[in-house]
Length: 180
Image (tube, rainbow, N blue to C red; front, side):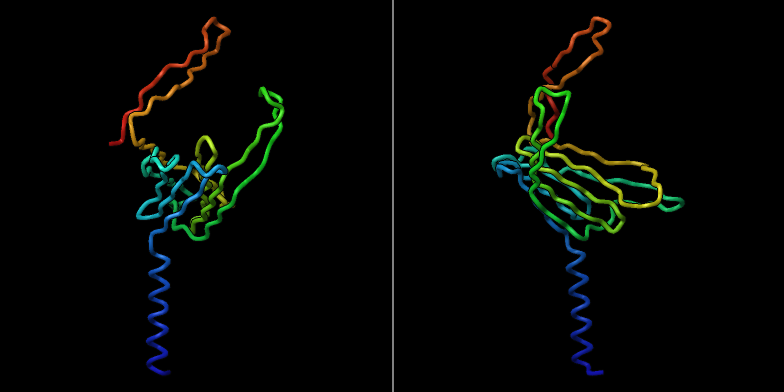
């Protein structure tokens, strides 16, 4: 075999390996473009949220550890990534409206451990969820959910009580500790 051909093949394989091992940076925006969710797959998977260019949520960890038989599984490496805008609605008999609009930017990331990360960017918030596409039963040993806020924002947390005993529904202002 020609030495130049062999050298070129080795260099090509090495460069492809390097490309697949590099950290990736993915973004998805809300329908109105004001909210942006960024996912990094550096050494660990993190997500952050910006609104109108202002960082609201600093990079925060997403992780999961699962058991399948005698095998421990983690998040794995991200391979295929799909991004799209979803325009949908659904009927609800229990809300003040008969129909609720469900519009968001979606980022789907598929890992080699058959775990998908779905990230949604709505006009008024962001969410993610982990989805297993594994056909065999799994046991979740641990899950990391981290929220590192960029500032000491004030939040209103509704504490809803069962008022059959006379309790009333309340909202208490709460201060969340800053990540700085």
